[in-house]
Length: 127
Image 1 (tube, rainbow, N blue to C red):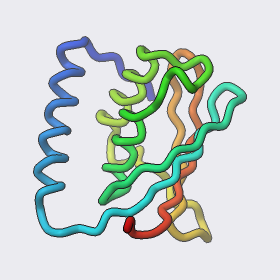
Image 2: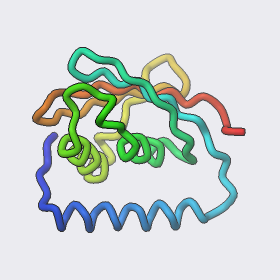
Image 3: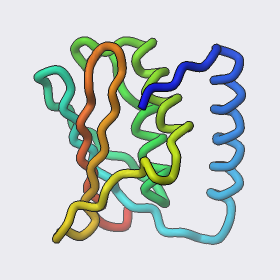
Image 4: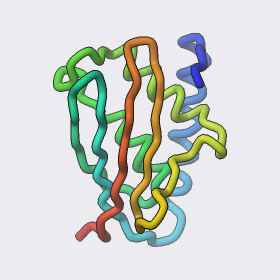
């Protein structure tokens, strides 16, 4: 799935979801978890960890925190495309829980510069 948005529309969508995230983060006293992301992109494997209250929050924080200087063939434009795809994702496009495993998911994203294959592991509550 590939979507194209203008700069103004992308900014509005991002602002809307940031507001929703802030509202959700302020509700209740949820426990934060550690999500480990393992991404394969154009013959490179990249790992990172995110503290988040939910899988969807973790995925958005992961995408926003991608360090393009550390990922070969990934630039700021591609990072923005990844974030826009994640924000616009239909609930049907959510990461797939891997069969027979607990707290392990997979999702893939195609952008013009290549395909990302991402595994996510939810480890434990953050301390």
